[in-house]
Image (tube, rainbow, N blue to C red; front, side):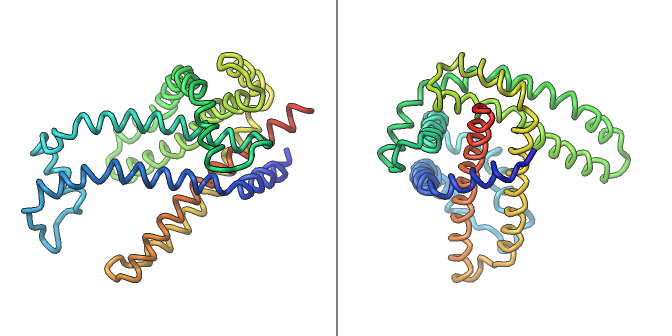
Length: 287
C-alpha cells in the first residue's frame, strides 16, 4: 500500500485548517485555568506556612503526595467542584471532538470559531452515544491487553534482577501503544461515517465495522505511522527542552513558550490523524 499520498493529503488538510488547533488550544487554556486556580488557591492557603528544604530528598510532587495522604480532607471543600469539573471535562472532550471532526470533514463549512462551536453542538449527542457504545470495545481492548501482557508480568514476577522488570515494563508499554490504535481507529471511523454520510450511530458502527473488515490493517498501519512520527518529534523536542534551565528568567520564558507550542503540535497531530483517516476512507470507499 502506498501510504504517502494519504499522509500527504491528511497533512495538507490539517495545515489548511490549522485554526482549529488554535481554537482547541484557547479553550483548553481557559478551562485549565478555571480548573486549576481554585485548587491552587486551596493548596497555597493550606500549605503556605510550610518551608521546603532547598535540596529536598524527594521531588516537590512526591512531598505533595505524602501531604495529601496525611491530610485527606485537604481538598474536601472542593470535592463537589472537582466532581463537576470532571464531568464537565468529559462532556467538553465530546463537544470539541464534534467540532473538530465536523470542521475537518465538511469541506463546505468555512473554518471559523462560530462554525466550530456549531459543529460541536450539532454532533454532540451522536458523538456522546458513540462513546457509550464504544465501551464494549474498550472492555475487549483491556481483555486482550491483559492476556497478551500476562506472560510479561509472569516473567517480571520471577525475575531475580531489575532488568527483566524494566524490560517487561517497556514491552508492556509498546504493546499498549500498538494495540490502542487498533481500537481507536474504530471510534474515529464511526465518527467519520456520522459526519461524512450523516448516518445514525448504530448504522455508523455497522458501516465502520464492515469497512474495517476490508481495510483494517491499512488504517491501523497509517495510524501507527503518524503516531511514530509524533513520538520521534516529541523525543527531539524533549531532548532540546531538557537543555534549558528554568532557573534563568530568559530560559523560563522559552520553556513556557516551547511547552505551549508542543501542545499546539499535539493538537495539530490529531488533525493530521483525522485527515489521513478521512482521505483513506474517501479514496477507498469511492473505489
